Length: 438
Image 1 (tube, rainbow, N blue to C red):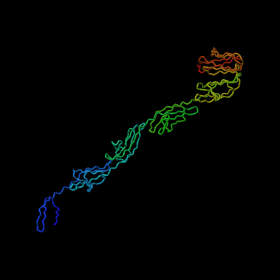
Image 2: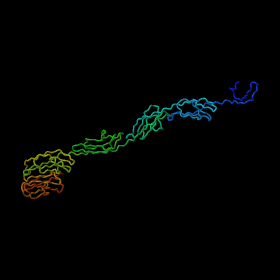
Image 3: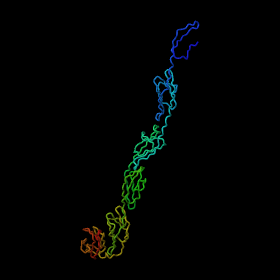
Image 4: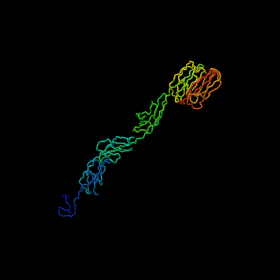
């Protein structure tokens, strides 16, 4: 007979045995069959799905202590927490110490959400006329956009932005993954300082030039008098005049205008001359420039040698080209003068006479070569015949030049008459003041 009793319901059993030959029965052994242990209920769980920053999920079984837990029905552990789980389907069970296993709880761990790529942007920097910038995100629809990582908007355009650094991100929806940040720097438009320049003034035979010396370099352009801007800081071929110089940078900012005056050298007018021809007793003539006059001019009859006096008193017969040179070096066109050898009765009585300048200012020069030896006198009269002064009185020698410098006592504003008396006769003439009241 079999010693095994199976399929017994819970209860108390008395186990005996007997000998088959004589039928004797042993004392009874009491055995209690316990009720079957309860099967644990299906586990309750909490699930943390993968996120943009954490690519794995977590399953936590909510249960009292005393259970073992599994997500594959094979491997059990005391901890109710299963972390670092890849995307997939998991069968969560728990079992008692008696080995009873609960029904499985099916949990799905989602795939890791996609992270949008770093946004691409177009940038309009602040300028001199618009002090704020604009950032535009180039992206398909469906994103939200931010320039600070906190505040998101549906429009990809951010305008009216002050100069500074911005972190541009995009994400899918309110809870979507955020892209890596694109750093954008808006730079304040820099002011352009007033330019400094070097100047070559126009001369008698050349035009002027303005060269901007600061600011210079890549990104700058230059203009004069509101004309077109050019890359070169140099403006050549400029006539005398006023020039407003401005500089513009790459942002379109303009400098204050710098005024440059090209003064140049004024043209020297062609000289007007008065010519004294040789007389009967004089073998030389005289050339006197009567216009232009002034401290700024010097005079020449050969184009080489210049003098401050406009009068050349002893000029041999010949052809001369009279020029005037201004103190800056500009030279006038020449005036041709011919000193001939023909006689002149004007000087026959007293010999060769030159009186200059005529018109006169503060000084009158008398130069004459007497025809005879003897006494000589130079007198000055007004137009009414009244004697004003004796410029010279003394002995003279035949064919020996006499030079007399007469300083006018008071500024004269009316013409005067001079009279030169020598042993051979009397010579007179009219002198005009440089500043006449007539």
